[in-house]
Image 1 (cartoon, one colour):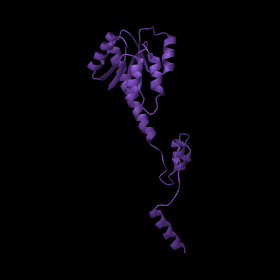
Image 2 (cartoon, helix red, strand yellow; image 1 turned 45 degrees about the horizontal axis):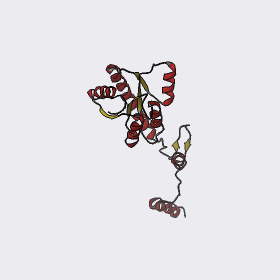
Image 3 (tube, one colour; image 1 turned 30 degrees about the vertical axis):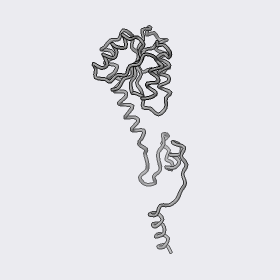
Image 4 (cartoon, helix red, strand yellow; image 1 turned 60 degrees about the vertical axis):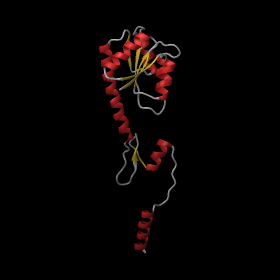
Length: 186
């Protein structure tokens, strides 16, 4: 898995990088929150490990920007901190969209366990995304079922989901079939 590190302390960054690479991950290292955001914005990754306190942009703001960026798959965000893990800090981190919280100095066993959890959660988010891509459609009338279990015309459903407008016509095969019906009826 490709992991983006945002850590301003050179020693802590190198220890984290070596631990992650030892676990078999590809690592991209940045030194500030601003650099991390620019790197992420250019090429989003599915997992971020970020320090909380960094120059320019802190880890909470970085996470907030990741969460606000449209059209990307879910990114699992682990926040590292030397600050105490009290209720107030957990609350701030959760409100920013942080998925997990580890204290420094880094415990190699703990980060390995957290990465296994992240991998499972990211797998589930891919599965949910694939399921959301399936559109339940009636095999007979071709109406589509929405989230409220209401069946509506395909055109209505697509317009609500995408804003697309439709014009109606008749394809050559249907035209021939309708003409044949009219000839038989007369």
